[in-house]
Image (cartoon, rainbow, N blue to C red; front, side):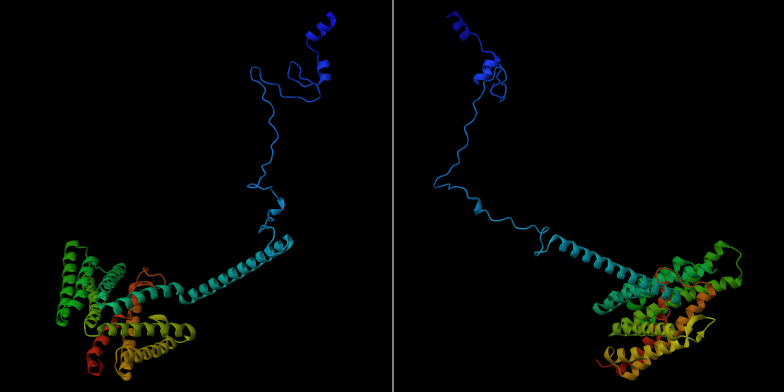
Length: 398
């Protein structure tokens, strides 16, 4: 009896607990499965009951067949193409792209080579010169078409800058020129061309020449640099020439602008001069073989002059008839007059630059040189344009 009671009261051994399948004092199951040993002081929670799916009339049972199939990914299947076909298409696109890039690079190289040959033959960047010419032409055309008063500040700015350009070029050639007084006097002279009576413009010219001459004489007296009498007279003459060549001829253009329908005459004589210059340039570049004045301007040819004749006469006839409303013969006269004045102005400025030992008056306008390099044919054309306006007034059709 004592043995049975002792065996019941004593704790079971690990072997006995393993055989029975109950957890021992250490919290380990002896049936071959380990259970988590609880932390001392924290009761062991019973295992949760297995989940029972909710299924009733409100929540019917889930049917996996009701799920639509997953759509194919664009990267996996494009219009039913396999991965190999897609790779082939990508390779074809890459090859076509590389071929197009090769053609573009080849065309760019050919364009640059052709542009370089043109630049070497013409001595300037032709495409850049055309772009700048179009911009200036658009500005002048817009000012004349919308309101001719807008052309006045443009003409004043161009005239003053051209005066500065010519004065600096002559100073570099050894002449004593007072740049600031030349610009001030020139600006006032240009403004008088539009706002003053014609006879006052002549008075303004005389005043501008006198002002620059007196200024130079006083400056020479102050400096006392030992210049000879002949050199001083040459300085005074050149200073007067600046006022006549740039500001006064610009003022004549504004005198024409101020008259009735004067904006169309200004536009016409500028267009004729540009047409003559462009035709001469293109014809001389393509067919020029016989120099016109090799000692003054070696690049000017008789073939280019023939092209200028055709271009100026054609432009004069068309502009005269359709824009100025004058007879065709009068337009031809206008074209011929502008052609002669433009040619003389171009040759005159070429002779001046050769005397100064320079190629261009300045480098302000890439592809063109300076302002005077573009105004050399326009400025002298103001005089015949104004004269023909007065003479052909009786043939104008309003």
